[in-house]
Amino acid sequence: MTRRYKFAASHRLHATALSEAENQRIYGKCNNPHGHGHNYEVLVTVAGPVNAATGMIANLSELDPFVTERVVEAFDHRNLNEEVEEFRDVVPTTENLCLEIFRRLKDFPAARVERVRVEETSKNSFEVTADES
Ligand code: NI
Image 1 (cartoon, rainbow, N blue to C red):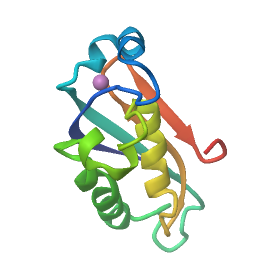
Image 2: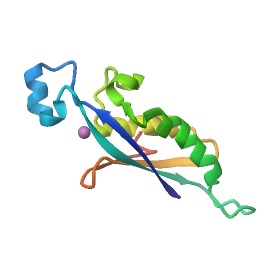
Image 3: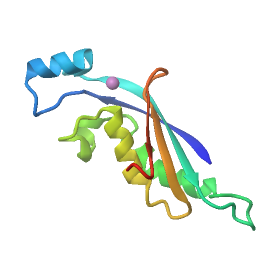
Image 4: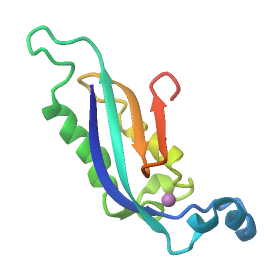
């Protein structure tokens, strides 16, 4: 089962281990000191047996508050670099954002979190699956 969630956040791609010139060369306009924003879409896939009594893999009434609290409310209208502890020293690329979202969701109690997909733009998306993480 896959459920889609959305949040808006800003970030700046800047690696503290690299020089200003290297950052500029690697990240280009995404290295702008003032940052820029995205309307991120997160697709969370959970897997498991269909419960014989409910006919469901997991109840959305359990998944929604779990994802909302751990991801949507934690990231929505935030500056990822400044306001999310995990990105103080880790570049908030969407690869790293996807990994962080997976980490925050992987212990969902009602079903196995199989995949997290983050769509950064209509052209870019990133995925983490349970066996790779
Ligand atoms: Ni960006």
